[in-house]
Amino acid sequence: MPASENLNIAEFHGDGISAELSESIHRIAEDLPLEIRFQPIDLSLENRQVNSEEAFEEAEAAMHSHRIALKYPTVTEGISPNKILRERFNFSVIHRPVVSIPGVKTRHDCTVDLHIVRIAVGGTYEDAGRRVGSEAAVSVRVIERGPSEEAARFGFLLAQRLGCNLVSTSKHTIQRATDGLFEETVEEVAKDFPEVQHQTELFDALLAKLIMRPEDYRVVVCPNEYGDFLSDAACGLVGSMGLGASASYAFDEAGNTDLAMFDPAGGTAPDIAGKGICNPAAAFWAFAMLLEHSGFRALGGCLAEGVRDAIGNGQSTQDLGGTLSTAGFTEAVSAALKNRLTGEGKVKA
Ligand code: ATP
Image (cartoon, rainbow, N blue to C red; front, top):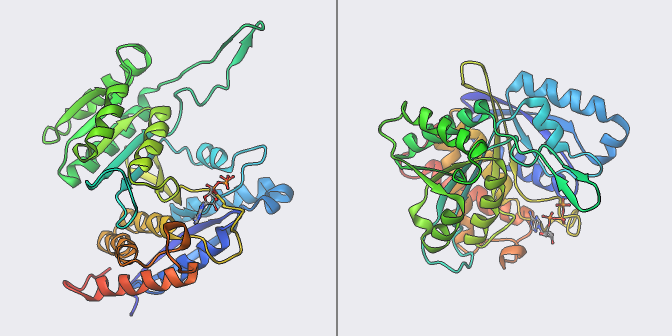
């Protein structure tokens, strides 16, 4: 297909199945009507052990030049590369879509199409805490207005685009200062989006309702740790812990998205690395989010749906009960993508 536009992407390589995921991404990139250039950065443990500072400096330079990155799983040994990248890039919002996967067995027969938008910093995660004597311990929990506002604005813009309502959730009746500040900030941002219906739900009640009626929820905005819990709970609803994609965003002073990094949420899967059997679906969904973010919304949609088409047609890797290798599944997605690109409406870049 002739390429009509360019896209430059920083590509952060990691460990385990990272190389196989990257190979699949490059294969699918060939099918897109775009001239895509990847700038590879080696964030593998091997390289980090000898060139840590240089590796992250390179990642930072590539990110600042392209503003978008695709990241593969990295091993955490001592320091967490994800934490370092988050701090260097000033990521303040994480977006995790959780969508039903055709053919994947779940306890529900409804379709889940949920977007969890969380503050990427603070909550209970910044402070490991300390012991007070031998019988007690304390830690500090932080909520800041800035990242709360960015998460809320991101969530409202998403809800506006999807034409759905937005739920903010926390324990503001108990954590009155911290979660109270979060909800107060969301309320303020809500005034700019009168067409989006906004409800506040207590986090414990939300979990119960989500499990009973997941189809009632589309965009949920919350503080850091609640978003972490909620993402895994929602993945359980669609029957897969490791098959989600995640996006991290940093914003400029005017509140516009400045830097964005997309990654498959799963780990490095060392037990199957190098065997050619890992499932690249989440990496494809991360790539689809990157395309959508970069203005190629229709292409991203075709890729995301193409992955679902392939799985729905029974073409899947072993982890989903199929028989295909990573390369075989990638070809199945390529065919499904081409079908969507050349089918009805002939999607253009
Ligand atoms: P890490 O320390 O990087 O989190 P891990 O092995 O502890 O690695 P995961 O990488 O999440 O955790 O793997 C958990 C299980 O899920 C493993 O058995 C792994 O093989 C499987 N798994 C993870 N990702 C994939 C994938 N993309 N395709 C197939 N199986 C996967």
